[in-house]
Image 1 (cartoon, one colour):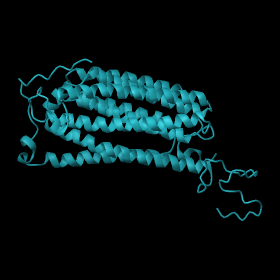
Image 2 (cartoon, rainbow over the protein chains, first blue to last red):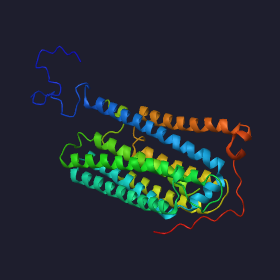
Image 3 (cartoon, chains in turn yellow, green):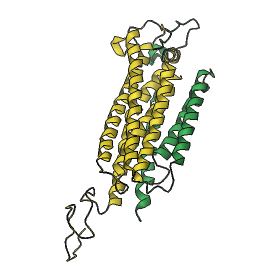
Image 4 (cartoon, rainbow over the protein chains, first blue to last red):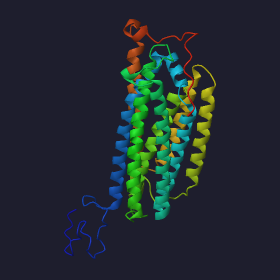
Length: 230
Length: 125
C-alpha cells in the first residue's frame, strides 16, 4: 500500500477528502478495495457456517448412535410428536428462507423499503416457528416427556425412550436458540436498512445475515425427518 | 470488475425467478417426504428421507446461499465441513459396529416387542 504518490494522501477511511479516491465509510482501512473486503467477509462467514455445521454434527451423531441402539423405541417416541407441527414448521422455515432471499435480492437492486419489508416478513415467520415450538414443548412438559432426570412419561415401556426426548430437546433447543439469534440479526439488519445504511453499493451485511438464516433452515431440514418421520 | 468471481456473488445476472422455482421445489419435496414418511417401507424409509433432505439442503445451499454463482473457496469450506461431519459419524460407527456386543448397552441394538406399549396419542392443541 506504499504509494509514494506526491499528491494528496488519499485518507484511509477519513471521509471528507474530495479526491476521487475517498474511500466509502464501509471500507475498512486494511482492505485495498471493496471487492477484496467482500471476498474476505464472505469467506469468513462461510468458515463460521462450517463451524455451525460441526456444532450440530455432535447432536446428529448422538441421534444416530441412539437411534441405532434403540430403533423401536425411537420409532414409538417419534410417533408421539405432532407431525403437523413439525411439517408446518418446516414449511414456515422454508418460506422464511425464500423471503430472506427476496430481501437480499431487493437490496441488491437498491429497493430499500422492499428489502426491509421482506426482512420483516422473515422475522414474522421465525416468530411463528417459535410459537409452534412453544406449544410442542408445553405438551411435552405436560406429558412428562422431558430430558434427563425429569423424565416421567409412562407411555413407552421399551428402554431408551427418555434418550429420544433428551436428544429432541437438545437438538431442537439448540436450533431454537439459533432461530432467536438469527431473528435478532435480521431485525438489526432491518433497522439499518431502514436507516439507509445499505444499498446496491453496500449490501454484503444483508447477504451474510441471510446466509445465517439459510443455515438455520438447513439444520431444520434435517432435524424434521430425523425426529418426526422416523 | 476483475475480482468479481472470486469472493462469491456479484450483481445479480438473474431475477428472482430462480428463487421461486427453488422454493416451489422445496415445497414439493417436503410434501413428498411427509407422505413417504407415513408409508412403512422398513429400512428404506430412512434412506428416502435422508435423500430428500439432502436434495433440499443442496438446493438451499446452491441457490439461496449463492454457492452456485461463484466463490470456489466458499464451496470448499462448506463441503469440507460436511465431510468432517461424515467422518465423525463413520468413525464412531466404525467403533460401535466392531465391538463385542457385551460392551454395548443392552448387548446391542434392541429388538422391538410385538406387543409393545402403545404410546400416548398426541394431544392436538
